[in-house]
Amino acid sequence: MKNILVPLGLSEDSVSISLFQYAIDLAKELGGTIYAVEIFKELPRTGSLPSVNKTLEEITASSIEEKLHGLDRKGVELIALPLKGDLLEAIPKFNLEHSIDLIVLEAEKGSLTNPYFLGETSGSLVKKTEIPILIVPVNYVLKPIKTVLIAVKSGIIKRKNALMPIKEILSTFNAEIKLLQVKTTNFLPEDAKLDKDLDKIASSYKSSENATLFQGVLEHLNESHPDLICVFRRRRGFFAKLWEENTVLKRDFESRVPLLVLRGSD
Image (cartoon, rainbow, N blue to C red; front, side):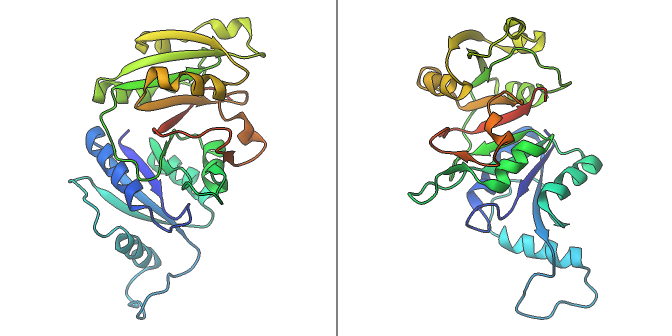
């Protein structure tokens, strides 16, 4: 995961410094580069007139740098990346040219008036992009990843290299992989067959019967004590509700540890 993209301004606050610090700390471990992305439709407002010699990209990149001032970059390369247009269109287009390995997002802030775990924009990114996405709790600080809980309904993984991000985490942090297979009411006989690469990296295997994959994960969280949860986005998978709505409610799911969403098969 050499190229890590972090969008600005998806929550109530325009910039989450804690999220960028987490991304930098993760990139430091993985040997990656951070792309700080913000969408501009016009020149940002500044206290003085911009120099006529500066391009739109230079001015907007400077604006991003100002917002991220004070971060401990720890030697990690951080590239200010202003993009034009719509975020959901600009990121996939940029990915085709630069091969982004991971998008890092922040879960919605907890409050009595905010019922969402994922808001509309972040939920749409999970739904529509082909890039693995890591969702980080608010103000979360990177800790050594020793245990990863991988939750699946079907053991079939058709997408090539879908497991590469988790393999890199396994290699970097020497993590233990606990595999949980949740058998729901629409569980098919062929779902019981585990992908050979998934079976190979798993340190342990457990199955359970639950109404949804959500419920299976929640039931086994306390038992597994994971530092990271990993799921696959499929049409009938963990975030199936995102095919109907671009949000996830906290009443359906909420996590105190980061959640990595990979592509299995759509």
